[in-house]
Length: 316
Image (cartoon, rainbow, N blue to C red; front, side, top):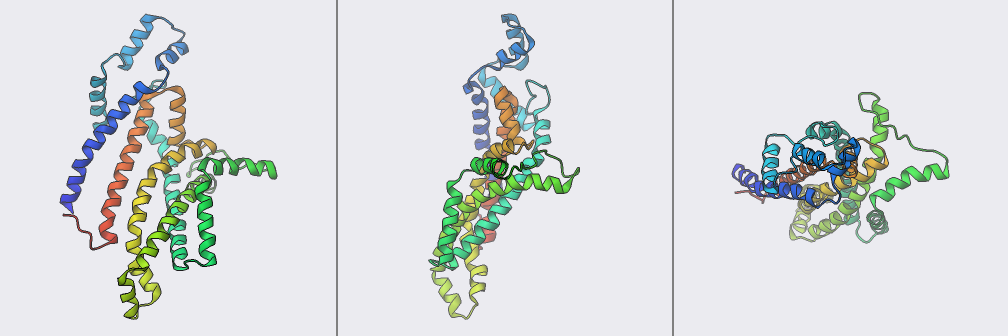
């Protein structure tokens, strides 16, 4: 196991280097020029001011030099400073990370609990009325995008009943109950879409495992059906579901950009959206790097969980 983890960690280095290269090149591909915006803000529209500002921001250096400098900064924990506020990008992300992490963790728990649970029930009750009903709900959950659910949650109560949900964010230390009331709706909205995807895959893998020979052998030995399902079938069926869950983490982070904006939650997603609008390149780059590292780490942990789910899997 130690050798496997070491190889995987070494193998992640090229992936990280490619990610950092794309992040640096991304700045060159974004339309518009932040230099013009800053000069307009300072009312200095002349060539001399432009040259001085480009030199101050390091934009006058060749792309390979900027890439190597950025890589060195990332490995030392320096993601640069905001072009507008001159505040450390790392500190900006740290300030906004807590709401995003809360929404992400809750949405994964909600989506996993609902999706896996309903998938098991649907597979055990195959082709029953309950199975058809749950599959119809899953299809509906896949069809409605996150932003539509979030917008509907905010708009429809105001139109139908004249009630607007509370959109004023408060931290957990200020008012725990109000904080949960604000965090829970976006987490449920993200979790609903995730649960629909997990439910369909969980049902498929459960049905496949239920037809295996070891299930018939377990029943022939007199084991209870519930014991066969939860002690034998479930662990084998969870492997592809856990894999999908790891891949869905990136989509959850992308969905948080919309949901945080709709619910006015000061998270990383909203920070990213505002940075794109103001062309604050270092903040955009820093957020993309942090998200990339999070996704890479999550998929590594998912790979390591396979041995726990299936003892036949060995890392050597």
